[in-house]
Image 1: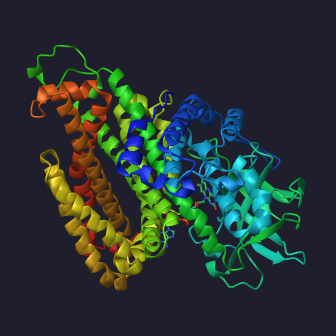
Image 2: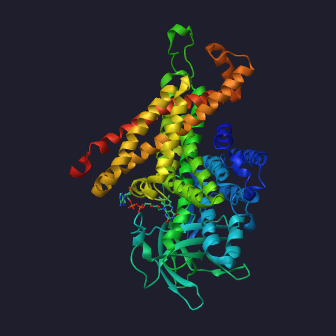
Image 3: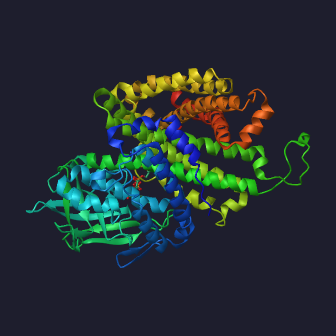
Length: 613
Ligand SMILES: Cc1cc2nc3c(=O)[nH]c(=O)nc-3n(C[C@H](O)[C@H](O)[C@H](O)COP(=O)(O)OP(=O)(O)OC[C@H]3O[C@@H](n4cnc5c(N)ncnc54)[C@H](O)[C@@H]3O)c2cc1C
């Protein structure tokens, strides 16, 4: 399978749109400059295309095996993990004190994009190891931090997050796993967790599980949950490995996709001897776990966008190879019996719509990661603002990007026709693999409820108003550029309607039901407006830069033929030109239907509740 990454677009978004250079001036990033980051990105593309992507199909076909509590992943995964470890990639954004590379989260997001598109199953183990390690780093105290995190960041050991139980999925508060404090300060852990990603495997010497469990006298619900670091093999005080810690893998799931990622049932304390360390304080478990989940949710959104990007790039390449039917415009004088399908307007529509969604998703994800970086480098009111923006955008990243990531893989399959439905081409694996992103880390329905019920009203709507104001400014700028005028108008109309719903929301929250019925379309609408606005900002930049290039070449920008010839031949000009087309398409074809969904909320339609289901 050929995997290609649009590094030009990732770099445009990172450096030219976000302005990463400014962030790199902060003392925390003194080891990094633009040249260094660009080198890292090139190396990542190399590793992703040469190694991770080339084993993606093989890993899918082989899957994982379970026998007597032990799990084996495809041997190619084990080899790839060695390479990944050697390159220090697990700790790309981790603290240098613990052996990490200390890069900004915005850069980490681009790296996740590059790697996840190459091999989603592989990247899951990285996501969880990094997340579990951060929990221990922040809440495990100095000793545990050094005992566990250095080895997790180096990739010697991996990590998991263990929330789900047979009767506690979305309803985490229903967990029944127990934790009893011992005289030595450790806890005896018992219970069964299911669906645990990388819960057991043969890629590392040890696995550190982050487990939610309840002390005997703790209250019911999420308030009674505490968080524990539970090693598969006990770790002695000097860091050496001790005895097995009574953590047993009872089986693995057989799934639609991500076949090389073991999804495990784990029994803690089958023999009553499983021990763990409390992280933070008793009763803080859910709040702490949210730290890991919020970071993971942004990354799951990245997975959606990344697999979508990979499937789009593959479909685009196929559309140039596959010839069917004649050229649509008979007046063009082209007589070929068959033309590549990329010439057909409907195929072009599917391709550019996919491209526009990929770029819009990346923009929303990168902006969120950038706010996360800024929140860590600022103080006072600024810090609070950036934190609230991250909080607002996290469910949007997770749910909006994973929903549309799936749809892009579906359009990509459609571009192939019948061949896309076969396993001869990568389209079907991308579609199968990406589907899980709308389910794990909190289903998208629950994310939407969080967004509308909790995040929109947060700080009197301060975060959402901040973004709305920015987008109104973008509309004004866009309207002043002839090629973008109509796109800006479409965006403007959407903003007006969305503002109206925002105004109505406080009332509807009292009604309750209206929110719950409309949370998904409202969040989808907001995602589309953000995507449309951010693409418009990028198109304004691109238009400006393209004008400069044309002027330098002495090309009259009104001379359509000369302009077309130039943008076709010059790679940078092609990218800038397409950037403008992406923004035009998205604001005409993605924003209006997303905004159109508001009609149900506007008219209080509630047939779903009236229906007898
Ligand atoms: C491949 C895979 C990997 C996973 N990895 C992990 C992992 O590493 N660690 C871990 O702890 N878990 C993991 N999970 C579990 C995953 O997070 C859960 O599947 C998910 O949270 C949903 O829980 P559930 O499957 O029990 O669905 P349910 O909670 O039963 O939900 C079913 C449906 O009902 C909806 N629903 C439920 N309650 C409400 C409500 N109040 N309002 C509106 N809609 C509602 C949901 O949105 C969903 O559509 C994984 C799952 C899979 C499939």
